[in-house]
Length: 330
Image (tube, rainbow, N blue to C red):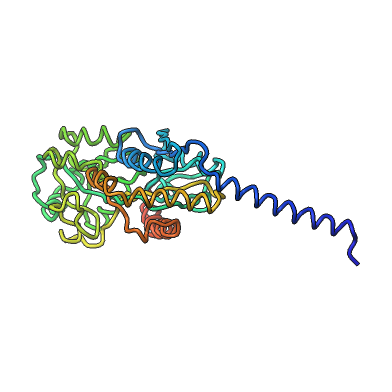
């Protein structure tokens, strides 16, 4: 026999559940009611910041609230990625991350958060493959000649990297292993001083995002040897892929995605995703992104599910490479 008090507790629990669902629904319907923060955990003026500002401008127009860029930096983006993971899941804090922040850092740092479980994916945003570029005066005229030169001069060439355990470090190690070459890594505290030293001839080569080097390649200040993509990059169709240059299968990209903290309501994720999709469909936005070397993903890949699947596939590819090489951040 059921006790009356027990029934009353059940009724109260059901009523509270219904009430909370109604409140959550009303809250989500009124979203956004104040500015949204998009954390870009890299310096202002860099490729990710430029991408974020182009995206935020168009999303602001569509959401009816300002999308504000914040540029806190440190520890290859791990500090602010962790802060976003711990933020309130209300849709007012998002992070524009990329291959390093949401894949590589999980293998090179001891993180206090989970790159997959502590975030809600919103959308893939842009693709930005890695270029192998050199100072303009480096003698080899193509990638095949460069590899032969590196093999003939083991350990002589200097390759700039934006910090030990960063993306360029990982890709450079990946390249050496697959080509039988050897060179010296020269760590920098950021991409900007590294690129300036490369232009000045203080170092020989670097692996970097197309978006970081495109303007200097166009100006003749840097020499591109190849793009680590499956097809030539539209922004620089004269640069061959590694596959074409005789080094098949070496593909790497600083692809970008947008995430929110775990637990952000699905209705809010859907609104943010719709704003990203609409922004990336705008011809003016696509032109601006192309001008800075960023490519847009096909519409069918601009979904939370596609970002989740792509991130997991990249983790499965890169974490074993990083761990086998014992690459650790410093």
